Image 1 (cartoon, one colour):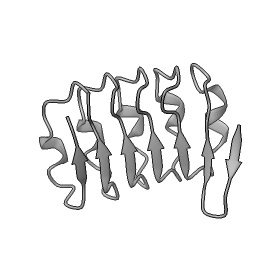
Image 2: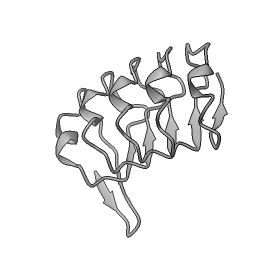
Image 3: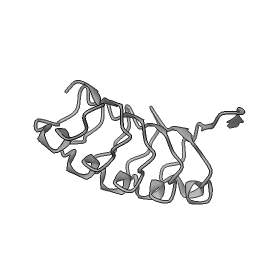
Image 4: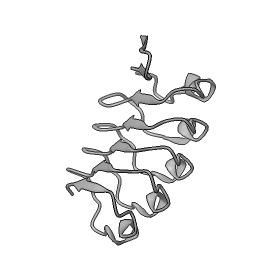
Length: 120
């Protein structure tokens, strides 16, 4: 189901590998929470994303997100993520959920002054 609003588009996809995501480059919001997504590599080209929900998925590697410079809101709760180093240059990120993750070191995010973190 694809729902659009004047401000953003929100997509709810349950595809295991998000195969159609690479072509949705104008998306500003994407909700993949509680889906079968395990690999975020199909998200690399979504440079316009400001909001991304990957909560309760099998995602463990956030390195495909490092180029998403417009992200302001990111939910990684209930994932297998353990390393947040790839997120260190996301200067626009203001909210990040790491609740129920394997993250133990938040120091890579220390320079993100406007970032509010929930969890781990």
